[in-house]
Image: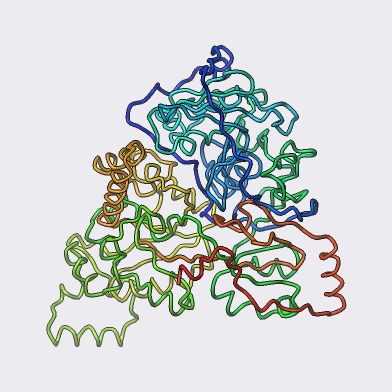
Length: 639
């Protein structure tokens, strides 16, 4: 949970006609005054108690698990400003139980739906109405039961203008027709349209503890920013040290301990998140201050010849997974003047030398991402990333109106000789040979990023841009500050990596609804009617071929508009971990995005004591010669 791969919002699928306007009515009053609805007389309930366990029955409960986090939380809220920062994935997954689905979840290896906070579900013939039986054992961490009213309250809270969250305002207003109480432990959710994936679309709602919620008024954002939530999950925030760490403590006698699909999960008594730069994580791990980390290729091949690894106290493993991949690459802000020229944006694509970066820095292990939906079934096979081609780049730069300043002084032999002599006598400035347009504006812009580990690759890219007369300036920011700048569109170019859900979600990134609003995931400020129409087809049309055609249209539109330069990806995680940290036989679920996604690990106290003794005695362990942990046959398919 260390990078912006985990700064995700829940899946959205909005429609155009709003169900109601933003409300300043009291959400609690709206919930308590609403009449219950009735169950259909012929209702048929479904459940699933036969999918394989996610965790291991061999898991041992206890211990303190310490891992790194890139930045201190901007907020502990789940909605409102900054609620999708680095910390949100931890907050949603282990305190709220929302990142994995909410009421139900898709099994991370088989993809079938399994119970979470609901034990049973019933999808009606209209494909937009779902009834759900809540687990009667489910409780918030303060001991109060989770009831249907807590879900209704979440929906009403999302509608409020006081939460200052255009994303969730639009979600509540246009995505759900109603969320209703049948009785204390039965819920009805009605979507705005028939869905080809109703459980995925409509059963991701989480409960907000209505009994513990402060007044939803003009002070709500300030009153909730630094207050841990009352939650139904296995962990609750127990300690906060600003700028340093956050600690989750396991809820005593957590209600989920008796449930099949939570067996072998959430094994630690405490989860301690230490704020640290990514590039320092391996140092902290070697000192025993964190238990596990993931590393890049340079560290993997050049930085792990250390005593802890050589002696087998710390293990290396490439864990192969098959999970949807999100955005990763350079993003251009379409509101920045320099990137309002499409030809200039296309030129930037042709200046990215992926092969050089992959060969020289990543040991040839990555593959090139081609498109917005790369790695999913919806990627248009005809969309290919533009190759490195300086000649093409010059062509598009010329179309954009950019030329060398020297062109003004002539292009003959004597003009060139004069410039050479001047260059030998006088110190060259940073602006020498930078392209300018007819207004005299230089081809100069700044790219913000958030990881020192990226600097080698970004420097290579910067050099290729500079040779072409484009002055790409690189600015490293603290991760939280970088992401906030992106949300507010206070940047020209940025490096950004985002996670992905099982199904792509183009609306939150590309719909015109979010084009003029800030603090959402439309980082580029992009939107067209044509793409809006294709998004609506993808979300609403029950014809699979029509949906595929629409998504291919969106993929082509993003490629043609050229505001996103896709980078690289891999199908495995390079994990470095202490010997006492144990995993199930298959190590990680197939759909894991990060090593801590489902928290299947545990600490073996006997092994931990043995490692400490081995370190004191200088006793080496056998080193596992097999680095690749590929239990799903992904390596062969990838190659």
